[in-house]
Length: 71
Image 1 (cartoon, rainbow, N blue to C red):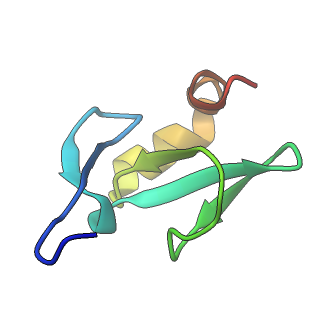
Image 2: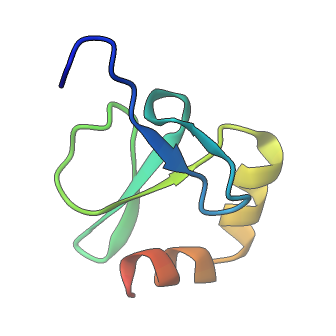
């Protein structure tokens, strides 16, 4: 990665764009959704804001993960 480059990603819940480092990354490993806190695990990732409202919605609506990961 280039020095000073900050990739942006979109929150799967609210759609807000933010720097990758400011979002929480989720992955699927062996059929389970896991939090990738250090953002280094391999596989497709889905991102979510670190706000209470987005985290509550992502836990209530499992459809978000099924759409993002094709489950």
